[in-house]
Length: 254
Image (cartoon, rainbow, N blue to C red; front, side, top):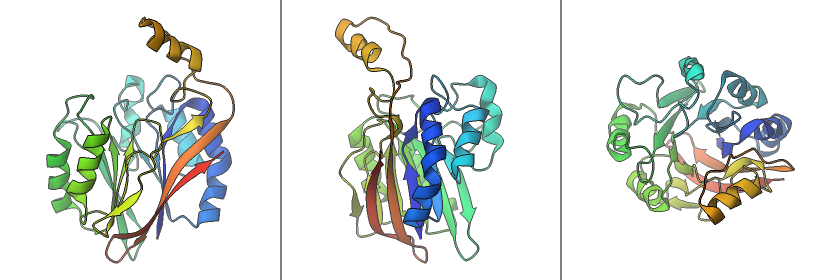
């Protein structure tokens, strides 16, 4: 089987690009399950009902999120959707859930969403949380979207879960890394899958205001960049009988 995982979708332009190109991507690469990180899909970050519906209508099966998952308080109801996840290491009692299972009949695939804690919100320990989840998930096919800032924390999670899950793919930094590998001959790993949105940008926002913030160290208002978009993604090919990743391939669609 094949999983297509698409990096952080940024704003209206990213959603529209996905709607235009995702169906053909799935056909070309014979994709069985599509997972999209949508935590920046609304204008100004976060997820709204509208951006969620755009991503699902484009062809996503599961939407994962990250540190901006609750930025839009008016949109908390989207987490009632069974295939919309927030990081599993939010405290007990928090709206939403961090795991879902997609049933293909002969096999199931579990999708786990986690947030790192280095340089991000001080949530529950993601290593402790995922260890507990592994005892509850009743399938060897486990995909982990680890939304984290620090590359070292992502590498640590990859090695921590090596041999125990199908894939650990990082999100959040919006820059695709070139370190795809299969850990312990079993677990597909990539530090960051990248982003989907305007390519001539700084992480999806207009260049000038983002550059000025670094140059002058005063607040600037970020706006979504204009211009041609691209899509960063990764394909995980795996044996659904044992959850073993047999191939990992990065994609960039311009």
